[in-house]
Length: 308
Image (cartoon, rainbow, N blue to C red; front, side, top):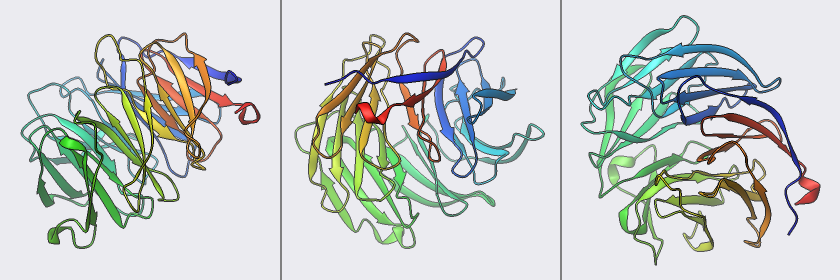
């Protein structure tokens, strides 16, 4: 196994807080971050430069997602007293809409890749479906334990992962009829920390709170590979992400390293020692051969795939 030969594009240090979430825009060279100091920061990923900083001091900010517009995001609160979340214009720092209904912390937030629909999952054991054009909840699902939600890349199917390794698949057009399929990831009863579909819709990534990552066949639910990470000292959850072509899975580890595996063989193909804290937040850019990691520092990386 070779070390990953990559380079920093830039190190960008938020003032005062650890980054809890980031999201790349699907069609433009933009990334937005949410941090514990209540900041929302927008960056140009082509030049790795900051463009704008806003603050949500009253509500805090935890999970954040771009809408389809380049100057609008949705984000959940982190202050513990207001579990609603907000549709924010980055252009003029104005709230466009509030979405209320959850009674406990939102732990998963996902925007549809095709339209104005989005989903939220909460520690109140509910999944709520929304539309940016209305503050009225469009659908409600009750589940067990901590959960995670994700759309496939066509926006036709969404998945809900819950305790006990259960993953339920729903048709977004008829979710009220119940799941059309259910997978059971046997052998691990840890709570779900995150879930993603690959761009081709053939695979799913499932991260758990006990520092395990599972690669699943999205059609059959079969467990293809399992990866074990070093746990974080402060028990923060560790995010995993697909490369845009689906060939690799990357995740930060509790020892501060970045680990990359082949989705085909399951072998670890690279391990890179990271000097910018534990990279708990990791995402590949959808339009470039680049990924971002975040802790107290936001770092952009360009991997040398010839070394993988």
